Each structure stands twice: as C-alpha cells, then as structure tokens.
Image (cartoon, rainbow, N blue to C red; front, side, top):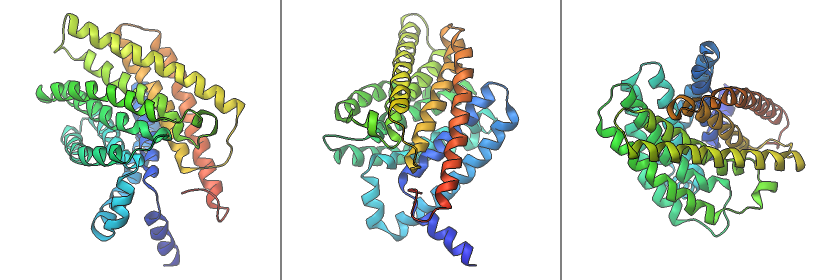
Length: 317
C-alpha cells in the first residue's frame, strides 16, 4: 500500500519534460525495427507505451483536477513533448500495421498541438533552453506520422497536411533559433540537444515525404534537397554538441537528459530513412552506427535515473 502511494505521488510530480523519455524510447524502437532488430524494438515499444499511458493519465488528471498547474505547465516548451511523444509512438505502431491506432494518435496529437503551440510561443522569453525547439519537433512529428500513414495506404489528403506541417516546421525552427541561449551548448542539462534533434526530425519528415509517389519533378527534387540539407546541419549540430559534452561533462542525472537521447536516436533514424528516399546509400551504415550510440545513451540514462532514485533528494524525476 505504501509503495503504491509513493508511486502515485512520484507519477503526479513528473514534469512535462518526462515526455522526452517516451520520445527517446519510441524513436529507438522505430530505428531498431528499421535495422531488423525486432525483439529489442518491441521491448522498447512496450516501455514507451507504458510510459505514455502513465504520462497521459497524469496529463488528464491535471487537466481535470488541477487546472492552475495545467495552465502553468502548458506555457512551457516541454509541454509539447505530449504532442511529439504521441506522434513518435503512432509512427512505431503504424510500422506494426496498427493503422487505426496510429490514426487515432495522430488525431489526438493534432488536437493538442495548436493550443499548446500558441501557449508556448506566447510565453517565450529572450533566452530559451533547447526545449524551445520543441515547437519544431512537435510540428514535424505530425508531418512524420501523417506521411507514414499515407505510405501505409492512408488518404492522400494527409500527404498535403504532412507537407504543410513540414513547411511550417522550418520557420518555427528559425524562430526558436533566434531565442535559443547558445550558452546552453556548454551548460545545458540535456534538452540543448533538441537544437540538433529538431533538424533530424525535419529530415525524417522530409525523407518520408520524398519517398511518397505523389511527388515528381521539381517538387520531389526540392523535398530531397531540403531533407539532405536538414540532415547535414543536424549532423553538424551533433558534432558540436558532442564535442561540448566531452569538453564540459555533465555527470548528474536530470530528466532533461532524455531529451539528449531522443535527438541521438532521431538522427540515426533520419539517416536510415533518408538513405533509400534520397538515393544516398552511405547514410544507412552511418545511421546504424549512430543508432547503437543512441542505444548506449539510453542505457546510461536509465542507469543514471535508477541511481538517482536510490539517493533521496537527487534527480529531477
């Protein structure tokens, strides 16, 4: 009984940034499936689904029972992990052939997205952490899931919606970049990696759109070019952020560290998906290497979380 009460109390205290754990685990499941590692992919999916259900229940409880806290948290960029996590999970479920469930998750994410996006942008400050880029991540997540459903036989109008989200995500990234505090690169708690991860999911969305047979001629060429450009810049961010981590190590656990794992997994998945879509075959072996780096980061973050729970007063979640 006591342990159950403690578990409920811990769940109710989770910050919105905990959604990064669902995003990180879900995208690893997607990448592992793309490389043929079905068993580990399904294991990661089970974990991601469990985490999503916990956070969804907590989200609903705050919406109904604690509106003040809900409104306060909805103003923060981390609130958009609710949208991004839902789209990542939907994308993996679509891979399993569960198109109805994936479509329902797309509808839920699309319902949450505009209100949270407007609330977050209205409360931006001059200098923002990497979570500011979640305005782009959430928008491109919608594009990824919509394009995935079209590829699986969904209605073609979803392709147009996916393209609109893809195009909107680009200026949203630029807007977030103007607010980003670049000092976060050397001092951030983990979500600073989203600066690169937002471009990785942009590349993933572009690759999925490029792969659709609906586009041809200049339209497909432009999509392909945008995909490769976003992926190239995301890889530059990857190198810069990794170098900064090595020069200024941040060893303590923080819930925002899951927002480091997510970009690592997303960059790998973007490479794996872009390889056949853009006709650049060497992106696949690169993606495979980056995927195992992301898996190692996931394991280390989970270990750090476990150790933080064994030390009262340590760790954000």
